Image (cartoon, rainbow, N blue to C red; front, top):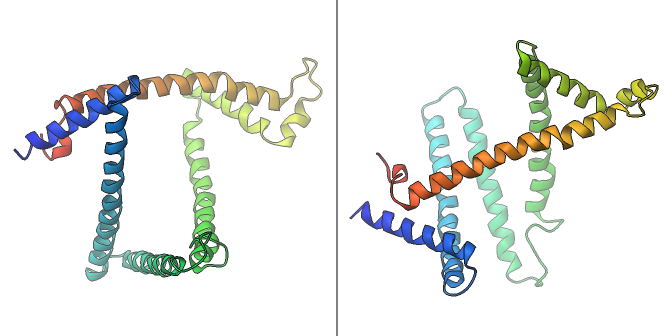
Length: 224
């Protein structure tokens, strides 16, 4: 019964959501809203489960004095600080004006988010730009036809995103600048490739969903 009950629940919920999408009327829409509320409750518990698991892993790194235990200490400290300000100012909001929110400007939670979290996120993405550049250098080598096409397209797109590209192509008699070529590449070939990828992802998602609903895929139960 440990496997039959979860499989039955998955089959019922998956079937209701599929029918509610194609038949948006009672009773399917009623069940869809009800199941949606249940998903919200499960997600709330899952967030706490993930946070506690992160704290457990970080505490184990600190206890075993692993090389990155300092970063684990910062994770725990940052988590506790944000939790404190979130709950403390959320508690104050119970007795404040209805428009009050712990995310409002001037609150400690907002200050930490704007001046610590946002700044660190911007720094992380700035560092990732160098990794993207190094990966592009390794990928953009004309070893075969596909890599050559990728190199040519990347050349036009990158040159079309800077003013120098337009300055170099203003003298061309055809009347198109490098920005025009870059926009055409992003709008036509790139969009066509993205749509093909999305169609493939959608087909894979549908097939996987059907396998889960019909009970053929049971990896989420642990095993098999």
